[in-house]
Length: 111
Image 1 (cartoon, rainbow, N blue to C red):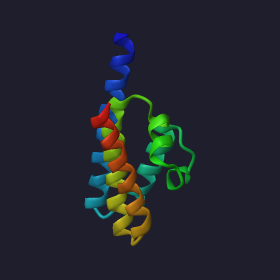
Image 2 (image 1 turned 90 degrees about the vertical axis):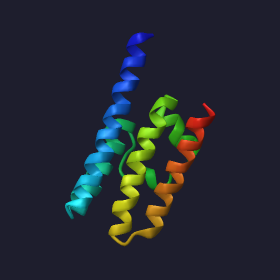
Image 3 (image 1 turned 180 degrees about the horizontal axis):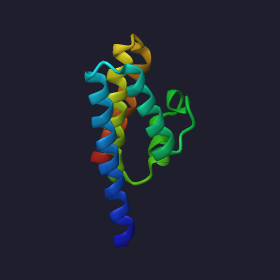
Image 4 (image 1 turned 90 degrees about the horizontal axis):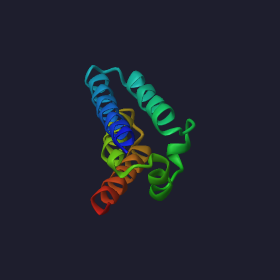
């Protein structure tokens, strides 16, 4: 299974890069771009249609993510998105993203 392991590690790296990009856009004051980047990440890397991240629970999100090795990277993207949402004044959605991130991190330590 070296191919599968390699793919998972590349995905984990890609998620870390996306989280860093979202935070970089946030620091630059480009909040709308940062939000779009997060939405694209949910769609392209997780297969989530726009808005689904707002209603999915941790168990469902974990099954969509698949490999537990990707949980921390997805959690990083969720936390970066939460910071952007907070800056945009959407505290409720930011809190939801943080809740999902915590849930994934908890599952990663249990795996």
